[in-house]
Amino acid sequence: MPESVFQFKKFSVSQDRCAMKVGTDGVLLGAWVMPASAESILDIGTGTGLIALMLAQKSTVFIEAVDIDRDACSQALENVLHSPWPDKVKIINSPLQDFRPGKRYDLIVSNPPYFIDSFAATDEARNIARSASASLSFAQLVNGVVRLLSASGCFCIILPSKEGFFFRELAEQSGLFCNHITHVKTKMSKPEKRVLMEFGRCGEELIEDELIIHEDKDDRVYTDQYKLLTRDYYMAF
Image (cartoon, rainbow, N blue to C red; front, side, top):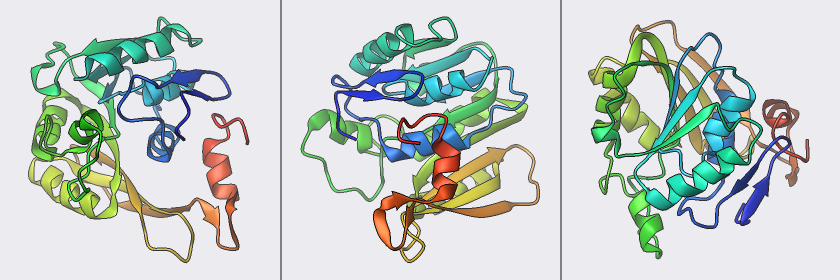
């Protein structure tokens, strides 16, 4: 989705100054997360502000969104101000490690723009954003969530499958237990590519399900399942 402006049904996202562009991962997470009864929401590594805006569309709750990159925060703020919800989202330029809001959140979301096993990117900003150790390791992310999540809150994340397995083990060692996992495939016949995971402080019976994005017969055709999940956002659906 490498457009300078990405148009959704109710808002648009400018992304020319952001290292990490609007992508399927962010849309999947934003559509998959259910704010339910959350009274406070935090988006970690907001980038363009995409997920914060998706949550603003389906929630009445005030959302805070933090990112270490100054340019990303500047652009995210512009996207928020140009959206229908300029008073519902606050963009904060800060490393997670230094973020001290003085409260805890009922819902924390993150689409970490870094993959442990990724090849080095050619663009320096993108490379920093994708590096698991450049500015925020998995351990630091887990520690931040443990520090900021309310007692009954949940934390939702999307990761590549291999990294998701590693992250889940690390999270559970710190008292965050996976209660829901959705295995994402581009096609039924293809191996799993991503995992959407929801964690809480209390271990519950694990819910596991599967999401297929494209029909096997034609990778230009989206499944009804994917259309149903994302139809409130994508113009095409």
